[in-house]
Image (cartoon, rainbow, N blue to C red; front, side, top):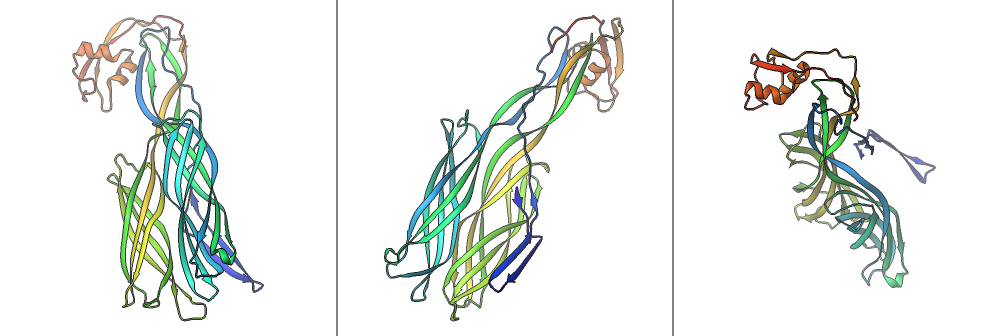
Length: 412
């Protein structure tokens, strides 16, 4: 599930000391269910049954699980700085990696911290820190060949300044690890069947499942020079970077994104507060090539800021360099037509052996002709000396042998 742009945003001040924020959000999501389905693989006690089989490659859910790990670290500030206040703390998770082994999914990542703080002598400083994390999610029967979706979620963040003499701040964050593992599986499915000598009754069930699941990464490099006269030649303390996808289209095996990156500059000023804020938006376009895409392909997209750099020129121009890693989770929805609950219709009248002359109609296949007339594909091919059973044409004359009804008991 992913949030879409704000429908509306309302802010107001309460009692002169509180801010009330009310926002309407729209979400779009995809629901999945794990279901065990029994299918007919063969019909016993009937030698002349004809079955239309397909070998399908799909993704079967092996298992899922949730665990948590912690990032705990002490961020050091300059020894000459006596901390007065932490102004802003921003945490993000980067360099994500997973490994499957021994019924466990091992998750590794870096928790990156940017902290803006005020010193007692009224200076504003920025410090950055990276803390590696590792955690396990237990899932039975997983193998190295399986496909794993791992989600990382930051929760319960604690920022606690230590004593002034220590020149440090303690940071603690809980990271929720949510894993879902899929197996590539090949399944033989009977899509249709009949018997030339008997009438078979059966139900058909349509089932939607997942296939061709894969993960794709693609880097988008944004390079932009912009005039920001408010900053001038002053120092930039920090820049908040927030990318947003406005539109996504699929065409010719390519996913095309249009969006914008919001840049919120925090810079030095000569005003009393010492900090100025300037927000600017940079549009971007990015495309990712993926083979086998269709309009019904399911695509979940995440964006990760891997690097950012901003250089202030003397002419009031700022050169922005932002690298965004697009993480695409791609899968197709496969609809399977399966047979279950096969039984025998004993009310069918006896038929004598005969040969039917049939003229092929548009849309006909040898399977449909054989089933309709009570013959078999192999016998039609043999009698008519057809070289390729997939190549018949409208108006073609075929000799179709039919068979005698015999009464038998069958089981499925």
